[in-house]
Image (cartoon, rainbow, N blue to C red; front, side, top):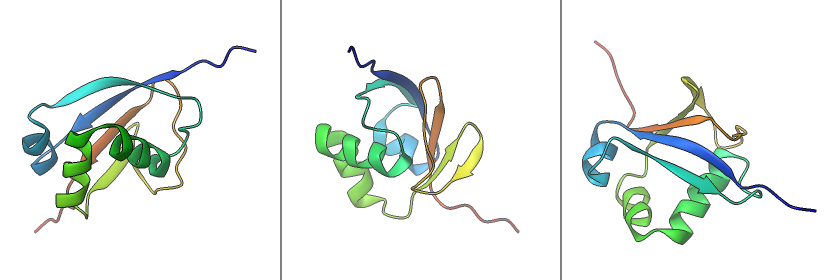
Length: 90
């Protein structure tokens, strides 16, 4: 049985964009990465750049396909995952 890796698009906003030095990227994930929490764990384990992002910006928020997402939110191939700091209005 062949397991397919999935591709997602990550978008960075505000401080996350500045920290990463780019607005986004397409990445390929192993099949076991199926939630936002697993994505963060995977990125932290495989990329020094992401490790620094998540260590220095601990209150980051996530959206999957333009909807706010909790850590247990599932992600699928083709999804867009946005990473951004908390926002407030006034």
